[in-house]
Figure 1: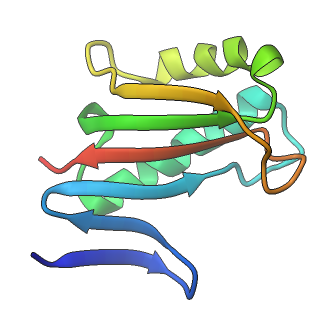
Figure 2: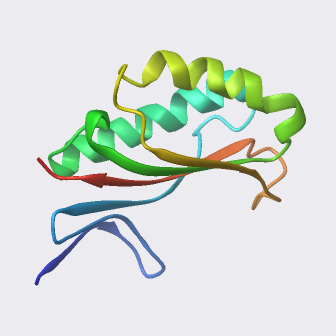
Figure 3: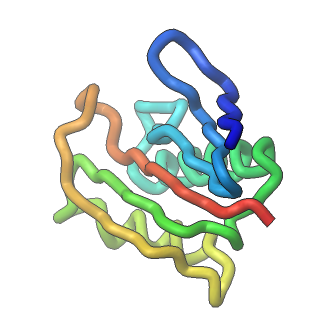
Length: 117
């Protein structure tokens, strides 16, 4: 079976497709000076663009892992944005954990697995 890698550099691919499954690298916001709500919106926008590039969409999400740098203060705000973004009836398997991020101003990162149509 072939493996398609897109938006690749020497360390990683932003998007990998194999056997009808799409794997996205962890996505972070572009504006790292923004608060959790805006960073969440940006991450979800990045995910939508990558899913579109792969030929699928957020209704085909299988699994999402969400990393927050402070789950105690950010979980509710992140979920508020998530709940308006996710189509009703299409909730993926999901885990949300607190993690030390690569940089202190990265408030959220999401890793996604989705199915192709």
